[in-house]
Length: 373
Image 1 (cartoon, rainbow, N blue to C red):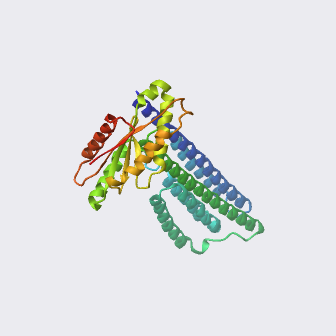
Image 2 (image 1 turned 90 degrees about the vertical axis):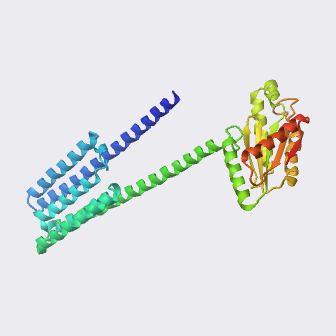
Image 3 (image 1 turned 180 degrees about the vertical axis):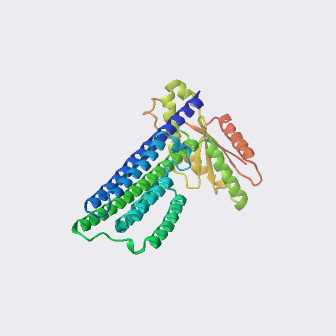
């Protein structure tokens, strides 16, 4: 049941993300349509200034409407999601390039402003289209421009014969720069959102790894992580002939703590003991909850003869601790079994010997340290 719920939740999140992306694409198409409308408006103004014939702005408007309408309908229907590039970047850029070159071919006197408008087209391409597709369209555009320059020659012009034309060229060029700037800002925001998403993903991954390797109650390493660290320590010891010891620490009569004072008190004892045990450890030592009220301490680069002081500190401090804030009359002690690793041994052999030492500490009356070599 839980697996089915997780799959359903994942599917719902995926559907929500897909819907959000589709809405963003539709908004982009609306903005592109507005950009085409702006171009058509300036063509109409150039017609009013006597620069071009009336058929030029009319044809531009019709073809721009067909392009935007087709892209919008394709996206709104969801058919774009079946394609490798659901943004339909390449067809949009290719259509825009053809349209701008078509204006220049039909009205070479407008060559400068509408060739400059290609900067807007390729700024859009850098924002949405994959690099390979944008490069393909750029290559085709370069070839088409070369053919246009060769065919049109001196007819390509800069419309500044009248004051009205000069004002229109200046205004239109200013808007081209503005649109390029807007697209650059949009691309920067997209990159920033992508970086934020990656950072959140990294944080989430770190949290997952933390949860997977740490005990939820004591915030120490869990059994799986301890065994992994123990294996790392064994490999290092085999390679560099480095001594290390393994200690198993078990809280005495812990069941009685839960039965007498409640599980909340038992949890408080486990957390307090974990904090106490870790307080004086070295960077080379590894501590964690091995299971229930049992903990493990791996003492790196430490021979058996040197384990008594750190373990005695833990045992003594725990026995002297005042537990009044947790429960009245509570006293907690710990039994510890410790052994050293010998080259050629398996982890099972080392842990079995440490467990035997712990059992011996319990048998001898608890609240003590027993070594087994």
